[in-house]
Image 1 (cartoon, helix red, strand yellow):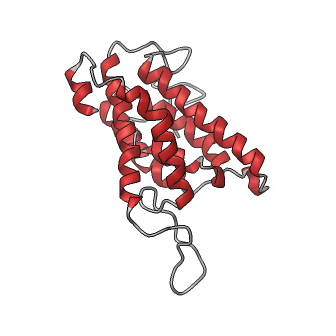
Image 2 (cartoon, rainbow, N blue to C red):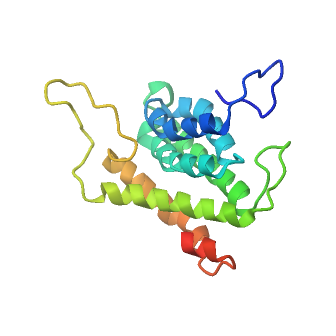
Image 3 (cartoon, rainbow, N blue to C red):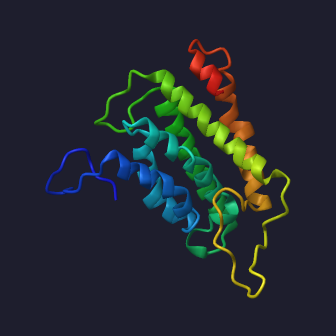
Length: 206
């Protein structure tokens, strides 16, 4: 789907920023349609590329995919291949979530390049803003689902076919607890350390 910034024999298609932005916007809806292992293998690499995009609006739009990605990595969604092994699902959940956190920490908080061939950006404050927006996105999705009825068994009235899951509004009880725990224990502490950031825009974003 994504192409490098230069055409070559192996990658002849060049996506402009509008096309990349369109991919960023549809990623949340794509993530909820696939198994957690498929998301990790195929969609997470795309998300990482877009999080490091040179165009600000592309980065801002793809940030909304992070809470949906973490939702997908809830242990109840992580039975890889449908084998129902709780232990394996728990290990997959932990490894996948840690992979996301380590990437965010390295690229947004420590300002490291996202790939060996990339260079660290000089706009480190904008990356701290990006991290704060991701934390806000997770918090907003939790708020949207805090007072609604349980979505554990969301069926159509005239059949037993489940609705296609909405990326932002149909959190199950387990998914809500999973996101809340990640926000409180992992995502929020680094963000709170920015309350006295030297850049005003970072403090305002927080």
